[in-house]
Length: 132
Length: 132
DNA sequence: ACACTTTTTTAGAATCATTATAAACTACAA
DNA sequence: TTGTAGTTTATAATGATTCTAAAAAAGTGT
Ligand SMILES: [Mn+2]
Ligand SMILES: [Mn+2]
Ligand SMILES: [Zn+2]
Ligand SMILES: [Zn+2]
Image (cartoon, each protein chain N blue to C red):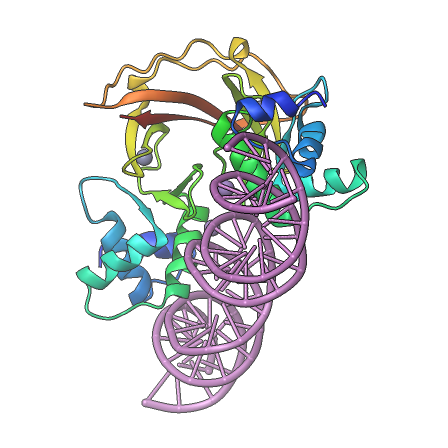
């Protein structure tokens, strides 16, 4: 399996469930945004055996901690994740409740002038809300 | 009462509860960020009579709809609101779980180059995550 | 003040995403 | 193979938020 080593290198055992979730998440050219429930649906469609919801949560959080997924800060009843872990930004279509990638190159350079004592910047994320 | 007219102009009846919540939210020089539960605590401290949690939710959402409060998009188990409804951005201190205002003047102008067909930009918000 | 309508408040129940539990199962190495 | 730590799973618990429906308050007209 092509993800076995990746998992092992991260200190995660390459279980059947994790490998299947890897396939769904990463075995594609395009990155995408998803909620846990959307991911569960995808898993159901793309694989034969069912993975328990708890495992989906556990795995997504494990992958997030390892840096293979990113959580997107947005006010929604469900948490959104992103398989695109590069530095980038988002449109949020309020009507469709869908996220759209906004590359760094589509946003001018962002220069944060204010400094907070004893703290360093971990990330800078822009959320552009869209309406009709 | 100084908020009676403001409420009436918004089509909201100036009830005792709403006026008290106005005092807590707006009768101060400084704007601030809060969760519903933090607001409930504040109300308890600053007033004698208790306001039911449902009313706090109702009022906050009514005020948000009228533009007197803003919701801040952030991944937290509780929703954060802001009494500062001007265009501005935020630091989020991951350790302290606290928001800090970041004025537009502390961030260079943000130019969104990508356009989405049939949609217009409603807001552009920057979230800067801070770590130690 | 009174009668009438509409809005608001309220306690409690319901919802629902997420997390915790703890028992069964699995990976892996000694 | 045997032991152990890690993982999965069904299910329960949690907790923020929303819903419900009855009581209270506010507004309106007389
Ligand atoms: Mn999460
Ligand atoms: Mn809300
Ligand atoms: Zn993205
Ligand atoms: Zn603010």
